Image (cartoon, rainbow over all chains, first blue to last red):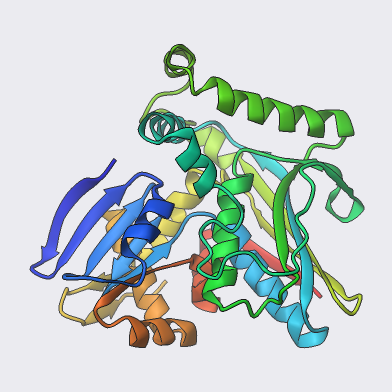
Length: 284
Length: 58
């Protein structure tokens, strides 16, 4: 769904889009543009002077970039990069539920599957010698048995787009997969089957009707106390061709989905743009 | 409005990075879609102040 939010100045406009990143890329990436614009899918895309940013998936994307940069300086080319959400405490967002349900209603299953493949958003495609990682795996460094979670494929697609935008400097054996630390093989496999089944079931309108009836709606979400008591910890590990290894841990002591988004917005909002190329930064 | 201001600030930060300069010079009258990690340190610093921390072990 696209909603025009109006114009900042004569040559600058805002558009709110709904996780249509792949469609946006196909339509706009490196295509001639008549006017600078800002595109924001969910909490996602920003544009100034014809540049758009995918802002979602920040912990996975920024963490992977930092880790690989540090490892490449010390050891050389990386091959396998794997991340896992080791602790997450928060409540379901009604807006996210609505977004997911709207996506299924707007796009065909074929389009959705194409958009959520790991290198679907990468301008250079898949690395030549990258070996895909299994959906369920044991990795002691990440807390044991790992399986998929709700954001696995979304975040992986953004990380793999960064790989392509950087021209493949992470190496031709690069592979990335995102997990949640479930703790046992049974739970990990159950998550894989459960998430797959849920996606398939939501293709049927009566199931979506039930989901809308019982899940939180748009504008509903955790209260202030739940946000303060939330937690988020993600760990990313990477191996190099020469046997080197490293990790980065990303953590927060509040609800990552809600309170952090608000804090980020406030931090970023200490800066104003006059619409004619002049910035006023009030510090952070 | 806060989301829009956030977006503008992100773009402002990106403009200051080396990779950002590459894309700003490249696009001219084109459009490109970038990812947040291309903003590197400037984004990490803002996130750290907001409560999202990064601990590197290499």
